[in-house]
Length: 125
Figure 1: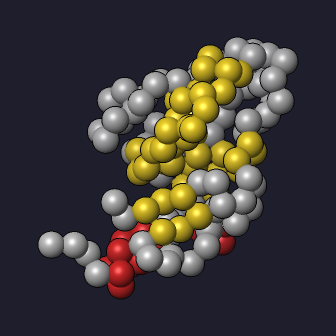
Figure 2 (figure 1 turned 90 degrees about the horizontal axis):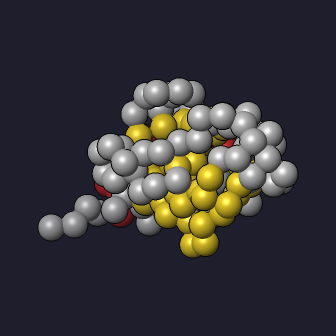
């Protein structure tokens, strides 16, 4: 049995009804977050995404309507493989993660990692 479109839209709207924080990981965090490997130095910090920074849910999908840009690295963050969403600026709970199509090596001379409009999507599946 599958969720109806209405129910799928309700679900993603509920998950993003409050601000969430985007984070990066150098490993697949898995469904329980146990594999999460966030950078811990070099000016790394999660980025807040407010509720108004998402599209309205359609077909069980929401995507960012503003670019999500991380702080400029001042040291190596490693090879970033996943972007994740959390319910807190630090610690908290993993809500969603997505592998990057191409891992990104972040050094102290890299530009700030950024995700353009529409690149972060949350689906009900």
